[in-house]
Length: 521
Image (cartoon, rainbow, N blue to C red; front, side, top):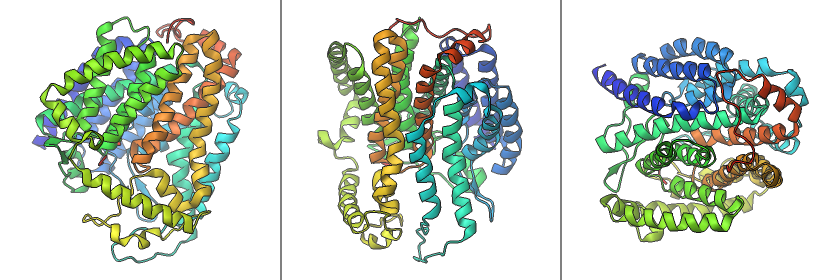
């Protein structure tokens, strides 16, 4: 209990400082009452998580708070993104039902009531259909429900499927994917609501990044006491290059790194028009320090790719890229001249790094074997593929296939892969076409779309280096919903205008048009 209290004091102190520092930025897009309520709920659930001796006691406290806060909140998806990793995503089974974690609590007690509340409203009925994306999403939902994947048990026992399992798979996809997508798509009816969602997520990630830096510097994983109290499991201190890989409450370094990479992409759009130069630069620095603390190579490259995509797709791309290369080169030279620079280079095999290069060789072998098995069962996959890859099982007893596309193609075939990847690919393509047209007449609206496109392309890139779980799974559906909301907002000008006119007096109006706008890697 003493350890819990010490960690709780550190978490609350750091979080309070970050909330205070970024409050002026958040209030540019967010109503003051919503900000205060969300902040208080975050602190309340954090305290409940550290003081609860079991997940179920936490759930008893958290569920009514989520119901109450969601009912009060004007933008429930923003509250969801602030609370998504307020405690570690440890799962706890209910026999005969399914496993619960904080994300599913949020889906059940925050998003599902919001979906019911918003369904049938005039603005929801007037929105355009997101037909192709919805077809891919529902198609993959049906395929995942009907196709049975036997669990990879140590004794290689092949369990039989049942009607109960089929219904359970359908329900879990509904809670973990479809509800998240639907609420994001249908409740964000104005550009201001989309901007608010982005800035609240950046706020959450700045808190996580600052805590991650503390974990690495102090060599102390702050949230492990919660996992030990709830599951009686000691969290392994994962080291790389002599440094502790931070994970805070994200579930793993790769999950943390992915969120910070996406937040970095969002911030490139949000910081334009930021009155404080210190906050503008400071958020970039904090997010990158958090990325370095996670020591996740995939998200490092993903954040860089998002930045390049954002610049390349923006008007005046050549000048922006030239300036970024000049400044980036100087910054890289400075970092490499410091002791931390040596550690970073050691973790990058493409630059001669020698730390954990065995994971690169292992993944190369997995790639070749997976392609062979996919070609043997190209349409609907081989649900027993792992039994044919026993020589690739690691000392931990698992086959560490950290490539979402290979995993989907092995389990559900190329048809499943097309449906799965089509969700984000079609959403990104449609958003790009619209933003390219809008940027000529309304730069700020166009740059918002370009920001979402850059993060979508970055996610497509990073999924090749991580399993579809935790933040990757959650944000896959959030991004698709954000892009759909962006397209709908552009096509529903009367709705957007009426909502802007009804904006509370404590909130700020959208920015004026014309202003420039994941665990081993």
